[in-house]
Length: 437
Ligand code: ATP
Image (cartoon, protein in one colour):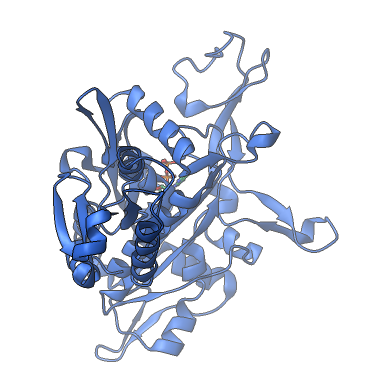
């Protein structure tokens, strides 16, 4: 893979309405991105697939949606106020700021060769004030991870759902980190979305449970069509573990800019529940009826990034091929992820009966899955357009359709075409799509 591939994906995202630079008309807010019409469908499909595999298909996990704003004490308890730092170095000449860990020469600016300051800690949490008065007592943070919203609700879940160990909580939501060096398109941004599971288990089962979750999450990416050779597991060495973790393995993707983290799966031990118990004064231990044991469960946390996954799936699905003198660009997205499942295209847009029939068919399909209608070009152009955004089936209505009540269905990946009766079309597509719509 090459940097060139990244440029192609970024360009496709803008050209076809997947991802735009935020506030572009004002020159853009750097490293902040907006999802356009296809982007939001893809992102929602990805989140839905995660929710299905993490919550709906399991008996042992409950969904949650905690607020972004939390009591400031939660971030003291979690260790984020004290420990959520990156070391930064500033250039005394050009004033640029760098993450010290990224610098080869810790004393010299990589851009202008000026002198760098000593490395200084920089807290990554965005702070603001709650209410109209800006004073110390009103300081509040935008959450840097969704996890804490689940830990602070541990007792509420025990009291309302009475689960037995092991069980988990799952949530998808925004997180904010004032990253020193964001970049690589949507890979590292200051505002992003996480999908996190907090899985509570007896400490004696934690090591085994960690391994199980690493495998479960790895196969989730494969199940959605990600290429095996572009995925790998990378266990953390002891010196890179976060302050709360005993062990962690990253699932990495082979991005055009190198192997990089998609998701981290960590053994957070009993750190969080113990800390919240201590700071809040509430006993957050779990009581086992059978053994009469009262203890802090260990937490296994698979923590993935929505935006990073979307980017990885886009890169993985991008495909180019020469067709005669033309370059065909196809997004070979998995059926569950493709923003549009089918597009209905009239072969002749100046024939009102054909247009009317095509609109009727698409109107009917829209009730079952995301279906587009397009009559703004010649058929070859319409196919290319749908291929570029990953539409799985193109349904063409032609003159003969008026007679034989059949349409042509074209498969995105094989480009094979089949005549299907209009009456059976929806059933045919649903069966082919094999997706939970
Ligand atoms: P990194 O080492 O890349 O900074 P991290 O180890 O700090 O990531 P975690 O705290 O484990 O990340 O967060 C879990 C997941 O959240 C990451 O695997 C990633 O997918 C996503 N994530 C974290 N920070 C960002 C960010 N700045 N932009 C986009 N996604 C992010």
